[in-house]
Amino acid sequence: MQTVEVLRELSDGFGVAGFEDEVREAIVRLVSPLVDEVRTDALGNLFAIRRGSDGRTLMLDAHMDEVGFIVKWIDENGYLRFVPIGGWDERIVPGHRVVLLTRDGTKQLGVIGTAPPHIVPPEDRKQPIPMEKMFVDVGATSKDEAAGMGIRIGDPLTIHYPFTELHGGTVTGKAFDDRAGCTVLIETARRLAEHSLGMNVAFSFVFGEELGLRGARTAAYQLEPDLAIAIEGTIGADMPGVSPESQPVRLGLGPAISVADRSIVVSRKLIAALEKVAEDASIPYQYKLPTYGGTDAGAIHLTRGGILAGVISVPCRYIHSPISTLRLDDLEHTIRLTTALVDALPGAIF
Ligand SMILES: [Zn+2]
Image (tube, rainbow, N blue to C red):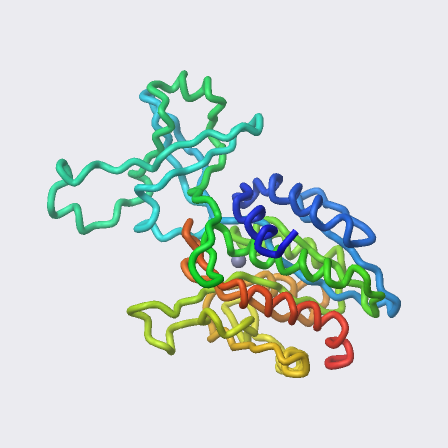
């Protein structure tokens, strides 16, 4: 299976934070042939372990969850009201298709309806619609009809456009934050599958990052790694209207090494080691400008007595929207860097 097909399957999978089952099942299927052990925990984290010979453990983290919504009310006419799960920009939510996952596992389609301009007063057309006024139309005409579709309060939903290839090695889809990271972990495991390893490598696919780095905290506690790298799909902002000093990362410049984000200031020793591994392997890299966003490394480095942790990201534009984009060459360079780290990082840092 090509890297792009792994990203396609994971991007199209349903994995709103707290409801990651479909994505987790896909990853189990993809990663199981490549590692020594696969296990899950009570909260839904997934660990795929390769055993090495030197007793130390490298944790490679990516989060399975994506931003979405949860049904908070079903009205008498069958419309659904919803609240966000994770950080959305309200301006981009109306006027999209959604997919909803019922408790019995069936999917229902709907649209986030908006009043047509004909009936919206001119002064309101320039205002974003508050999320509490938005609604989903699933085609039901009554509360009972929605119930008959299996829809209940608490069901998760998200905006869904199918993964699509654009021009020149650029692809678009939902949830590249962080299915791009999940893809990097799976492809790294594939490239290491025939290798014997020094460190144990714990590929850690965690739940609930978008709700405050929840899964990474309990994952790091269990794994007790000597070193951890979070792999993210992060904020590409090289686009019209954004000045260079406000672009956290840019597409086409390779993986982004974080120096500091809102959750961690990365050890300079670790940054230097990452730079050396990239340079020795002739892999281009850039820095993620401080201090945009938080990452799983923020939770990991504060676990137990403290864990040395850093972040490498695939540049993705338009994250936390249904139409994120990335360049496959950036994805490939991130996989190459992560693969190179497994052999070279211990020597560069310990
Ligand atoms: Zn993320």
